[in-house]
Image (cartoon, rainbow, N blue to C red):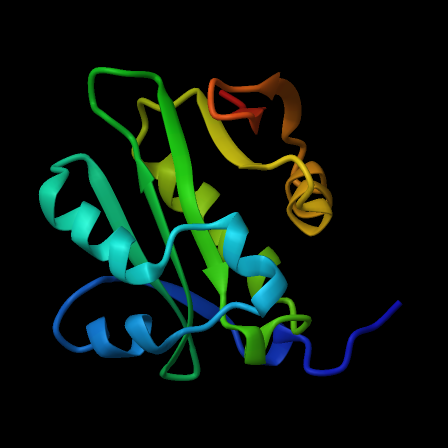
Length: 156
């Protein structure tokens, strides 16, 4: 099945968060029914400023910010965790989510020390479940906050 507006002709990039994209990240929106699934970008950016291990990225296509993600990959640990991820409601269904996860996994793998990537999501978030399963993430069960934890073992 082919989707119109596929990203094949519009590759995405993950860019560090800074003054040039801060406002655009804050302007991103989720669909109303998705808002319970992820913290607001304002909360996430505030958290990133306080947490030295947080790696915040703008998801950019054709010079426009279309999403946001945040992960950590401490040097003293062989695990990374993607703990924030969203694509703007106006940009969903265009392949940006899949492309962004692929870029994030590529970026994490290049760090060299990471052997496994964890991701967490609300158990009722079927779109997230399908997306991550498509990359080979395997559900491990809920955490203490009742969010599903899924793990991807990186090759090598």
